[in-house]
Amino acid sequence: MTQQAHFPPNPSQQPMYGWALDSRKHPVPISLAGRGAQGYICPICGGPMIAKKGDVKQHHFAHEFESLPECTPENVAKKIAGTWLVLELGERMAHKKPFTLEWQMYGESHRANLLKGVTAIQEHVDIEKTEADIALMQGEKWDHVYVVFMLNLDSKRDPLAYTQFTAQSIPVISLPSESFRSGQVTLKSLLESAEVYGGWWLLEESERLPERLENDPNAIRQILGRSVVQPPYRFWGPLVNVYGQHHVLRVGANLVWLPPELWQIAVGGTRNRMSEDLTITTQEWPQKDGSIIALYYVNLRNADYAVAIRRFRSGENVQANLPAQYRMRRTTAEEVARALIAN
Image (tube, rainbow, N blue to C red; front, top):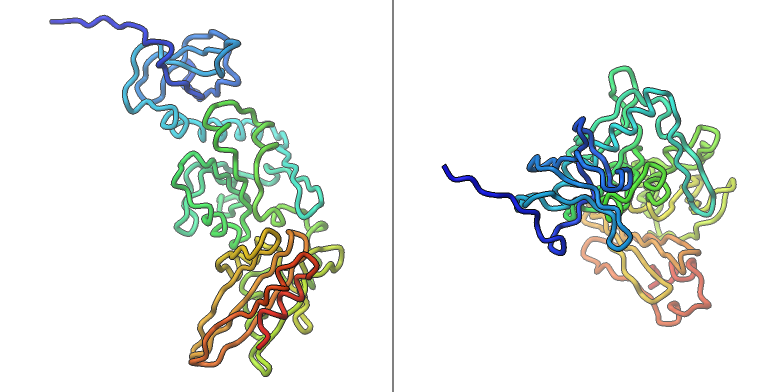
């Protein structure tokens, strides 16, 4: 029987890990580990790890001995980082401590307790064929998804997946991938650097949109489609402020709330950057009679917005008209929208 000696790896060649398991098998980010502390374990190979929090290199965990090829910092983070967040949130929920998110939405500040009414916290949840890394559930049977967290530890993650949640009235908290992967995190720092999608679903009833402002994606599609069913088969209009809310489109008697995120959910389309200041999102809806409804969302300097819609007859070429002068700074989004559907 031959025994092999274990030698510490060359420090200059050691991977820097952001995560490890403690002696109780609980995940620990390097930000919460003691300097020089031992007793940590790699969640992949089970080998011993040590916390290195010196003054030169970025703070990190390191294997005390040689690690396996699959023990990459990325794999270690994917293995246990989400579980750490579930345990941290679960402890706050058990002690009835709030977990307050603060975020900006269209120039206004909002706050929400993400644990309000939450009865369960689940990891790797399939919601309409899209996986949420973590889901906060409400209801006695845990049957209502209140909010989901996306950790972004998988480089193959499709950002469009967020719209699969927000279209179902589920807000998304997107966490910073690099700081999360490196373990340089605390609960507070995660929320401070998180991005919020569909944040309007987190607002209290008193803060939400007035009932007259339509924000249901299905209803929005119907309203926009009906706007061009009769001659001249064209519609355009600016997004204005109504009831203190930005991005409101008047379509006949309807008031439609259409910020860029909600347009992407209800209509979708391709973003076309026409100039430094002007972006136009285009979409086409083929109809049963062979006609095509073309929709345009005009974003000028991220401050001025408008919508244009035109129905093209069966066999008619779908085309938009945008003379060069409408790309100049002195124009308005409404002028661009009107030009897009002009003959």
